[in-house]
Image (cartoon, rainbow, N blue to C red; front, side, top):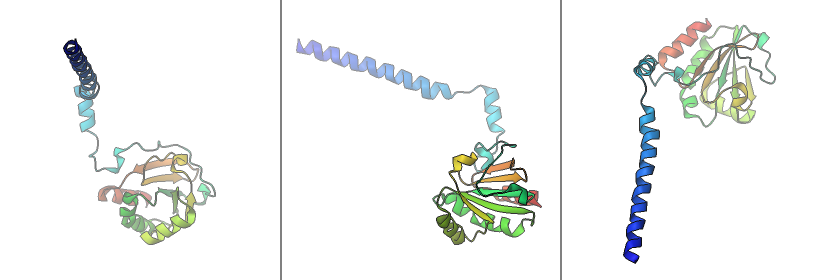
Length: 179
């Protein structure tokens, strides 16, 4: 009798394992197969090292930040950063170059989730100078990843955005767009 129960239990374990494997294979292996048109679309996207590989904020989106009057300058570059983001720290040379080469009609504003004093110390440590520092949850301005750069017009609307660490060519393109 015990022998029959052991055999029955083993059969149940085997059947359960086969069903579970089938479900996992169907969900994770077979569902990742895409039609050829989708493969071509993926192949035409920028390489993974490009900052534009992640979703960005749509042009035309209105941004509101406490204490920031967008009409004070033609354009504002918002740097959405975090003191714990290593890509933000690695991007400091670009931010320094941006500050030095931007026209006077463009101002830089940093938005960080950390306290203003902590943010100021972080930016000073990086050698990055900005017009204003705002403490705000990044999600409140539609940012889901850092670093994110937003180009804002004098009406408070996003005209362009970049997410992630920029390549040298992307950084040069942004600086030339601001001139």
